[in-house]
Length: 224
Image (cartoon, rainbow, N blue to C red; front, side, top):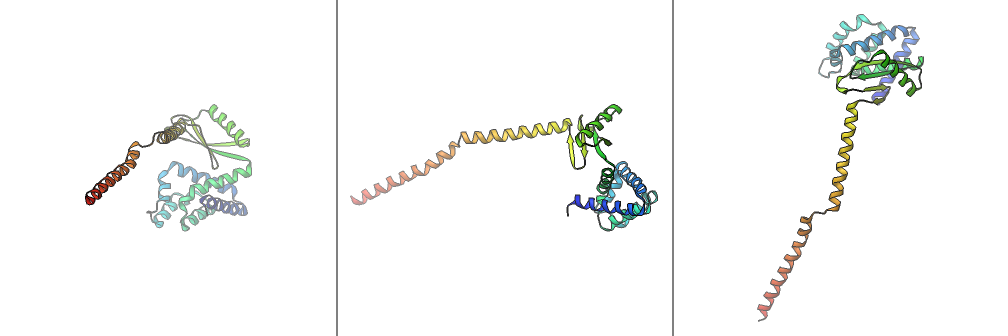
């Protein structure tokens, strides 16, 4: 089963359990807390994703950092992931859960990476643009700064990425130029065959001629 299917299946299971127990609001808050924690404490995500960190140590980290801050249902969900060796997928499952809840409420969440923080006006314009693209009037932005973008903005809505950064444009230009160079090199090889190979093909014929001459001379001497 593909990772995307797995994350959606687990997210759906968490949602259904929360709904059946009447704890949707609480789980919504827990999911928001966990996503924020993973975003602000990258070391926590590294520990969970590391294949060399023993499960017992991961359990201890979760017990001390997560268990006191979330409800019992949410923590059982996290423990389930750990027991199934799927803790490295926690962030994706939380995102899938949020997407599921947003879809029910008619909200689209856009993950935004920018080289510089967005102003209030820029954020509003971006929300409007995402709304036009997705056809959803209610948009929530999750912003993250990424200086390496060299300007521009990268927006992710679900599995679709809209890249308007200069870095992406430069990479695309570089790829196009590389493809053109390959095409030009291929054309030159077609128009100008290797002369060395052509000459090499003629050499055996010359050699063969010399050999025939020598043989004829030998036969003449014998006849004499």
